[in-house]
Image (cartoon, rainbow, N blue to C red):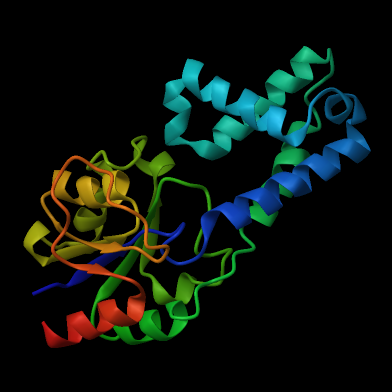
Length: 227
């Protein structure tokens, strides 16, 4: 019997890419006003490619995407022979916009019901946070990759969640959209997983599909009710 249900955030509770694109546009517009030399030299797509290249050379930054963006901004300041005293303000523009998510319509009613019966925990590789996205009342706590210095599918986040909730793998379920990060990550921690495929995405992972896969959280709630 499940006691703890862990939820992924991006693309499980809200669409990720529109949120990221809006946040990147917000910081790009800020730099166009305050650091025009950067935006005159690079398009938003080119800056995105530079940040991805940074992650290739500094793979440890994948465990803390906020730090990765700050390091990227610091590298731009250095490239343009500028001080980096503007970096924190610029990052905050991105971060605040990053938290302005558009929840899927099933999120609030399902979480409201499930929290009456289970301990709910948010797990994410990203840098959105439940206290800024209006979801803190539904979850007992959140863990991010930066908290354990290991991104899913590494089992560290799942293990820490179980330790804090004082439950066993047999009493834990993870709900997420990503075949590797969420489904394989849960398996790596020895816990059950449910695949949420809101976009009818194709299973492209090498391992076996999870038995339980749903199009939305209403279906998840119905399954949990019947279980």
